[in-house]
Image 1 (cartoon, each protein chain N blue to C red):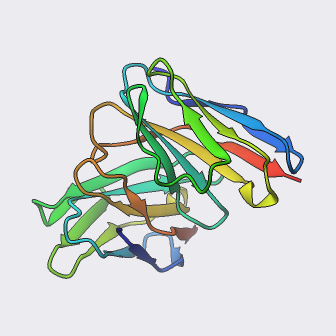
Image 2 (tube, rainbow over the protein chains, first blue to last red; image 1 turned 135 degrees about the vertical axis):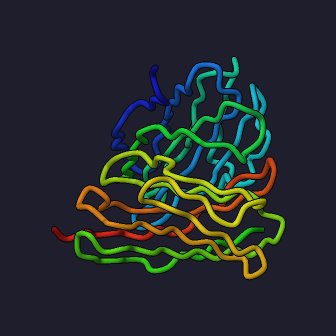
Image 3 (cartoon, rainbow over the protein chains, first blue to last red; image 1 turned 60 degrees about the horizontal axis):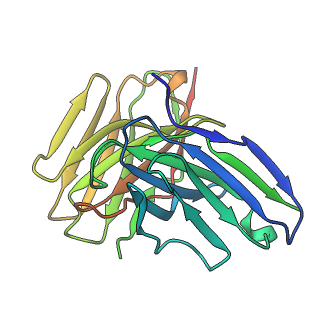
Length: 115
Length: 111
């Protein structure tokens, strides 16, 4: 079956612009996670959804970052007034059951470059 | 919060040798420890995981050991092959909490 997909695969934008990154989880997965991965680092947690609601957004670095999952499936990560330091690979993962102690299936990521 | 340290950052071995990657964690409540493999430009994929009620788990050439008292766990790869070359990440989590990842180990297997 289809895995987690993310679009776009690459996004180049200018400092100060607004971007949206999309994640399509595996069908039926209730849990969805967003991570940010900088070069040479492990995935850094941003936000976790259980169904439609954000169960934990403690990893969002500041109020320029926001994410939604209105129908409990597709999620969009939104970044306002982008800064060069936002450049990274943004990974999405989904999990079939409630709770984070289950396998997470990662998407291929969106490489964001802020010029 | 949880803190996961991973060593070494780079590991270079000859084909056929064994490779060992070690992680330590800080939160004694953590009870789930997955390992992910990430090939260059690709997504992380789970290769093995262990829960706190067991001390060792094996799957063909890979194994993971867990020492809860010392709060460390290790990945062991035997008979390494060039296709094992990748970045490996450990992680730790507890219950429904978010996993904390290590910084990764770049494994290079020379043919």
